[in-house]
Length: 190
Image (cartoon, rainbow, N blue to C red):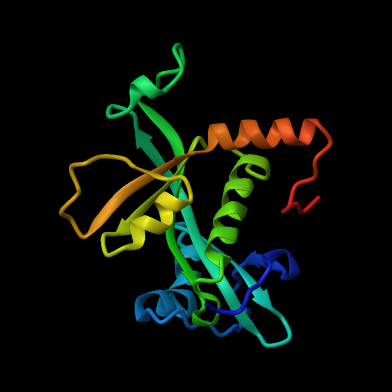
């Protein structure tokens, strides 16, 4: 098991042109995205990359990239409340998600996922009901299942990626109830 880390001990921010942080998750595609492609994606308004970092060592611990998305409700409309059955619901796609090799299998990925859930329920500026991800069908779906995601459809079982979704509404309801009873949030910029 890797070194235990609490993300609350590290700052986070959106990646900027002037940032120069190292990152190696062991996946060349993800490394290249963080180090070279994330800024062009941001400039084109396609996605924004956020990361937690160790300022002293100029190292990114983990990162995620998000963009707007929508979830078609045809396959699960019976799960939605009566009177609010839209054909599409607003969503945010997690396009990239990486954890540095030093911190893999330490719980940091789950902490980062909790941060994302909080970010899009408590800090979000627009409506967002779901998180979505196209998980590589190589064992990666297990991580997302562990973090409350479900498969959006069974039509992609044999494909390279599986579309998955996470309903933010129950999370938001639980968090709001907790806050109303005097609890404090873990990740707040306020």
